[in-house]
Length: 102
Image (cartoon, rainbow, N blue to C red; front, side):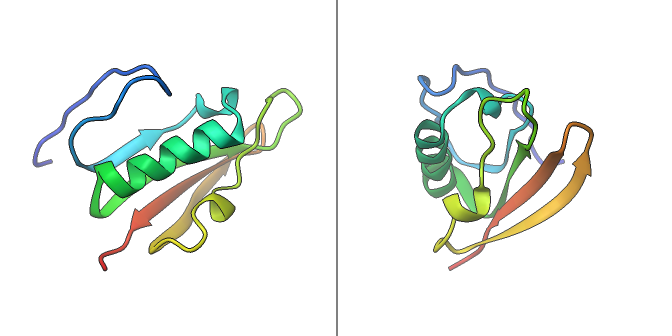
């Protein structure tokens, strides 16, 4: 580990400052509608994620969750690779989205 930093911010109101090799947004994003989540994650991906960096997210297909996000659709057309990490209880799927070098 080169340099590990944890920062607290209030999504979606706080600005994310700096650039990072990895951003993790798991187990809380299901409270936000598609427009808010998609726009902020695309902003983080483009502005705050280093080339070859990773954004880790999850999507839940369960009636108990208000929103289920389709990251393949959200990141369509961007220079990235979306890989499923695994499937977990409550129909939760975790993905890693790698920002590929141009």
